[in-house]
Length: 89
Image (cartoon, rainbow, N blue to C red; front, side, top):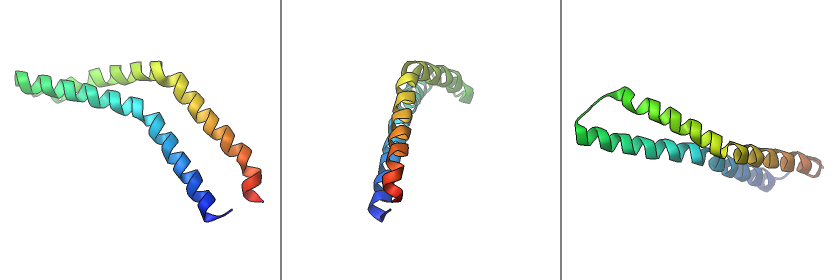
């Protein structure tokens, strides 16, 4: 196993992690921005106001994207396990 192989595996791992976290992070970011705008326009400074919408939004994002996320992670894992014999020799 060479150092370039390890770097390729690490790069693939980071890309898969980025793909899997993107829907949840984007949903949370958009909801947080909207709640922040609402709070600044109405002068309501309640810290717990953004928590419930974010939890609901992240839950909906997981329901919508969960199947794709699971298949992406399974494909990456299967590809990694299938390439192990070639990496160790």
